[in-house]
Each structure stands twice: as structure tokens, then as C-alpha cells.
Image 1 (cartoon, protein in one colour):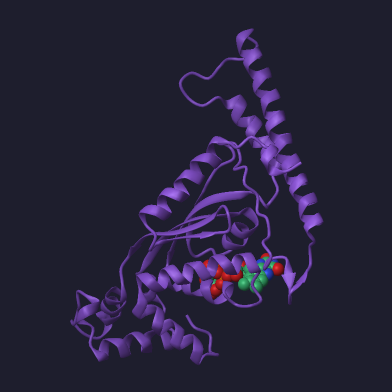
Image 2 (cartoon, rainbow, N blue to C red; image 1 turned 90 degrees about the vertical axis):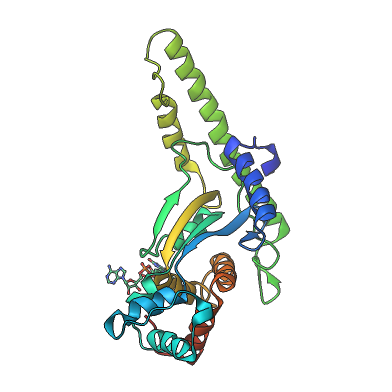
Amino acid sequence: MTMETVTITEATQELQNEIALRCRLSPQTTMQIGPFGFIELEESWGDETTILNTARISTSNRRINSVTDMTQRDHDLLYHLLKHNHGTPFETVYCRWRVIAPIFVLRQWMRHRMGTFNEFSQRYRMPITACYRPDEAARTVDGWPVLTDEQLCRQDALLAQLHRFYQDEYAVACQRIEEAEQNGEIQADEGGRNRYRGRARELLRNIMPVATYSDIYWTVNFRSLMNFLMLRRKSDAQYEMRQYADAVWQLFRQRLPILSQVMERVLQEGPQQVL
Ligand SMILES: Cc1cc2nc3c(=O)[nH]c(=O)nc-3n(C[C@H](O)[C@H](O)[C@H](O)COP(=O)(O)OP(=O)(O)OC[C@H]3O[C@@H](n4cnc5c(N)ncnc54)[C@H](O)[C@@H]3O)c2cc1C
């Protein structure tokens, strides 16, 4: 059995369409990761001048409005602040990211507490029927395949079976709910959501594997983003997590190149704890 035998849910189809649309409309701020993974730097607030202006509250009235006004002194100050762990000015620059990733990746992501998350709900919607499948690079170590094609096929079959189980049992639950509503055994909710179906989805989601994709918004300031990048782009971070962290870095670097260069320089100079 393959994932093709699973009925694609409405949420899956909508996300597939949206990924294609966003990549077409905004190629500079989006990236696809594998067949279903996606990341977009949707919005950012503040830039290098925000950091400099807020830092200068303690020393002068000099303020600048644009990065094009930055002098060598401004560049030096930006470096000095980051190098010497003056952390709070770096909390004034924010980014909002849209991320579609397997739950096991998002579970690691959400350990980063200095940020805000909003996530797709399997309470209100049926699960996304896309599951993570490791590509060639993901399933080899030094060129040696840790999982064979046959093993991956068996894994695909198991994942498909779980999604089929969910869909079949949800259909049974919905049928029973409908019959009970019709014969007056239970009251259909008026106007709002059907709480019986909602409860069925809440219970059935318990069997969904962490390979299932989910969809989040992540709003984070630069200080925390830098901590995330330092930890999740390192070679000891999990391969799939690193793929997303590298994508975050690439998109962020395009948005704020000066700050990114300073960050790279400070990190290369290591090994002191930054921020
Ligand atoms: C390679 C790797 C392997 C990992 N393996 C495991 C594992 O096996 N098991 C596991 O549970 N986790 C694991 N983690 C997660 C790790 O322990 C951190 O929870 C995660 O990386 C988030 O980092 P953070 O706390 O610095 O980030 P954030 O939560 O965003 O916090 C940012 C910073 O704020 C400060 N801060 C936040 N909360 C507090 C607090 N309560 N008290 C004091 N200071 C605070 C700290 O300075 C912190 O660095 C792993 C992480 C990596 C990168």
C-alpha cells in the first residue's frame, strides 16, 4: 500500500495549491524543501538602523532612518554590540515565518521558547495526508544507505495504513453522529462547529505519526533567531532540522544582508558565547 491509496484531504490540497502560488508570487522569500516542505519569510519588522537607534538611547541623540545612511562608525557599532553581547537591541528586529514541515521537525523547532507559534489544528481539520519520506541524502551516512528502498516501501505502507485507518474510522464516526442526530438521540450544533465530529477528530489524531506534515507561523526576534541558527545549523543537529535552518538562514540573509554579515563574522571569530 502506498500513500497514493489515501484520500487526499481538503487541507492537503489547499496547502499544495498555496505552496505553488506562494513560490510563484514570491520566489525571493520562499523555498521548497522536498516534495511537501515549504518555508516563507512572510514579513519582517525593523532593520540594522533599528538596532543602532535603540542602542544609542544610552549614549547619544544620533538616529538614522535608512541603512544607506550607515557610516563606518555605524557598522563598527553594530559589530561591537553583537561581539560584546549587548543583546536587547537585537530583540527589536522581528520576522514572521510560515513553515510547512514534518511534525518531528516542528517538535524540535518549538523547543525554541523565545518566539511565538501558531499551528494547524487536527482538532478543527483532518490531518495533512502528506508524510515525510527521506531522500537519498537523508538516508545515507558517508554514502552508505542506512535504510534500503525496501524498508522505505514498508514504511510508506505503514504510514498509508495509519492515514487510511484515520479516514475509515472518522467516516464511521461521522455516519453514527449523523444517524444519532437524525433520530434525535443527540442535538446537532446550531450554526457553529459540530462538537461530536470535533471530538472524533481530537481522539483519532492520537494515531497520527510524527512524519505527518504540519503548518505553523513562527514569529521571532533576531536575538532568538540567531540562537536558533547557531544551534540548528550545526553539524550535530538532525539533517531534516538543518535543512530548514539553512533555508531560514538563506532567506534571512537576503532580507538583512548587513546584519547577516556581522553575525557571520562574530560567529567565525568565536568561540565565546554570543548573546
Ligand atoms: C543538536 C541538539 C540536540 C538536542 N537534543 C535534545 C534532547 O535530546 N533532549 C531535549 O530535551 N532537548 C534537546 N535539544 C533542545 C535544547 O536543549 C534546547 O531546548 C533547544 O535547542 C532550544 O534552545 P534554547 O533554550 O537556547 O532556546 P530558547 O528556548 O528560544 O531560549 C533562548 C534563550 O533564552 C534563555 N532562556 C529561555 N528560557 C529560559 C529559562 N527557563 N531559564 C533561563 N534561561 C532561559 C536561554 O539563554 C536560552 O538560550 C537539542 C538541541 C540541539 C540543537
